Image (tube, rainbow, N blue to C red; front, top):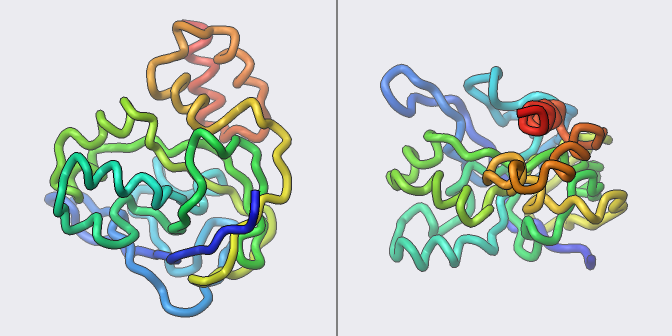
Length: 216
């Protein structure tokens, strides 16, 4: 994979989303370099640390490639005019779930990051987009995005590159793992689901999902 350009680096603050529910899903592009620590971009917030943030979900990447598909379903949706509609921290074209793998390591700016799991969409995504069916559509089409853990802190800015450094598990694409654990494929492929239990680079939360599904 040739190095790709980072189109935008985005962060968000925890703000009211619905009632007293807070969320930092609304992301805005940053000017200039942003430090990447072990828990993600400095200045980026997570409202509910029970389900967001942490070492395995430090940086969220949602493919810019998918925006055209969503626009085909919802033409003129204002939030699809620019990066950040899916709460992503990193906007890049040329990387999609069928081509990137769990355990992939990338040089992102000066930081070294590793894909830890796909992103499991929740109601907040549908709410902020004012699109009730969006979550079910993301699951149906396996257009999830993914998370990185940070191996080496560094900094990144729009215009920097992201480059593949290592791919130890080419058989475990993000799309395949998402399909098994979130998309309902586990029952039809119990052997693969069981194998995920021992995939050490997979986030602990998703290994727990694999154990639960493989023993059901």
